[in-house]
Image 1 (spheres, rainbow, N blue to C red):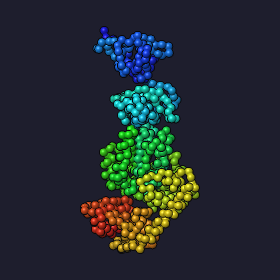
Image 2 (cartoon, helix red, strand yellow):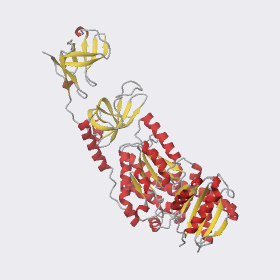
Image 3 (cartoon, rainbow, N blue to C red):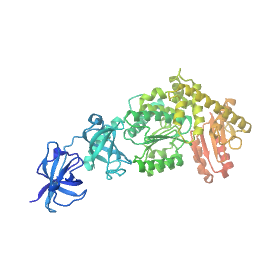
Image 4 (cartoon, one colour):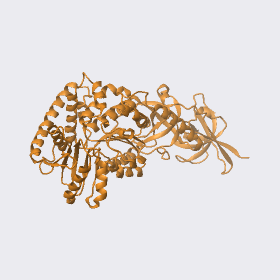
Length: 610
């Protein structure tokens, strides 16, 4: 007759063993009076030297009989020798009472069992820290094997696990001190995952609010804006990092900082630490109004290092004031290789070809609008959907963005009306110019605290006023010097369409490598010419050695379409570019400069005037 040997499962305690039964244990250590035998992570007993039958070493498996369970819970053991094949083993499973992560503060010092998804694995110089998420929240679980040694190497990101341990507080943070962890499989894992997903789906749903203003465009965009906000909220709830890329101008900054403000507040509200070495949220300006290969390469390098070193999930990529055009395609192909989720809120003229790479795409052109509904307006409304409590703080952002991008949409006047008595249109223009000026010197840095001062959300209005006054003064001086230098060299042509064309060489007759950059210089020249010829349709070309910046008024242009047709017609010119319908840029190889400019002027002449 074969003997029955019991194996004590994870989470079991002394209450789950019985006198007279034989258990499979492991030698834990030695003392002068015998050896200690561990039955599982929580339960061990003493094998007195008088009851040792064979010589053993640490970590050896051993069969022991429970001789006595003392009143204090101590176990007296006796070694049993059974022939191989002379016994069967049976798992003793703990009757599971599953706790939710939200219950941990109420169960400090008590043993608990949780079922959750692993969303981060970080190896420290001491324990391994698993960040886990269930249907109620996210917490850390610390497991220790040896200093700096990975505990539970079989557990991977995305696994559904059952964790046994004690609820504790370390450095004022709730965490589980892990005594056991198993990876759930099959139907058991599917059931836990379904429960988590259902709860996350409900918790990530944006609040039921309306747009700040009465706008048909915003109402039509609202479902897609809610969809994007829900994706961002879910990323926060599951500890998925977010990389926010935005065009480095005042409109893009207003869009991005509004969402940044909301996301960081939402992280705090849900118990996360937004300042944790910038792992959960990063905002990065992009020089171009599209997601350049340089941008995606920087992001991939950073995220892959974080994934390898800190066990981070791959991030959600959020693009604002860029991301809608064919120029984004090469970068999107890179994100597809790594399986990255990408969402976009933009007001550049969109190309349908990129939508297959996006989980959500908010763009006014999709609902009959245009670039007049700026990225800053979209960003502010999306920020409210992510975390409504930031509304008062960012209420002026749409107006700043609108005047920065010279919006003529009726929405701008409505947003200005919201801040009447607090900010004037001149205040908004000053903040916009200060943002453009300071971002030029920041280059690729986000300048988070400086930007907060410029936009008056740092809680120091006196410093805001002094800083904006200084930056506007410096920017205007630089602009005046640039315009004074450039205007004598601006050349005028009359187009067959009746429009006036002005050519401004921003390479030969402008200060380089300083503020204002070529795009800003071209825009200032264009504004000056629009005032001088108030009743005429005008196109201004800011010409560089291998690029042209295009500004127009009163001409029914389609710059993206023009760029595509020129690229097809001039295969040796290396043409790329795009932008808005009437404001944009084109790049080409320097050796084809004169041919490209001539062809571009021909194309512009074909557009009708208003």
